[in-house]
Length: 349
Image (tube, rainbow, N blue to C red; front, side):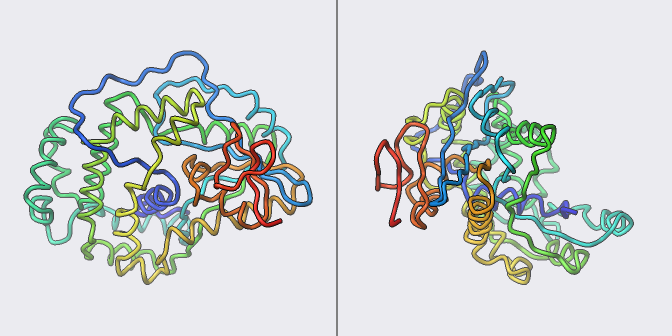
């Protein structure tokens, strides 16, 4: 099972691994809802080739996307149908061998898991200037909820982010469930690429988490920045993904705003005891290992990857280039500075 209280860990690990939000200046006070009408093709596919001629087709995913978007890509449908397996997005999965009744026994311990230890409130654990920013944004997007004032900064910041993107017409469902469902209907196996950790004593871990203070003020401030400054760019990125505008996506890529959140969790005492240090590197290597295996075993396979990791010169696809694979992007601009014939990025083969 996936331990419910650690879904936020998986979310932030994935974000740190690939979903990036560019830094920006200025302040966004009012945004019109994002509206995308008609069928949208999304970005094209990256073609990763091995020296043996095996191919891994990679779709760059994005979160959030316009709500209600009708996504239709003939290329994706055809390449997926030809593939022997579907590699899922990178992430973190924490396993606990509890069984049904063990899971039921754990549930009462999850009550209050989001709250600050010792009854502390947000105003007690974040700097006054930061809390003043929070109150303005909370009033705008969440309203008068008092419950969230008891939450740890990490959870409160993410609640604000979800409320804000919903307000401007975006959602976090993405296209991954559609592709996983299509693969299942076609009898194509879906392979997890998550970095897996087994939790031997989940009850003790929940207890440790409840009483431990996280160093998550930097995460909280990064989430405030995302909502206060970057909503307009998130909207532009979502629209660019829908229309397949890679030039705009490249222009708006940047450093990850979620890295402080992943650090806040991975550097906590309970996370170190689980071996979650260098979480970003471990999540990255787990995906790359499955990509190498698929390229060795399958004549054709299909993979999902956050689009910034496909576009970045130091991203996952660039790592495959450095290992000797050939990567051909949809529009001929490679993920590294080295370009071969016909816009193919390659290295050292």
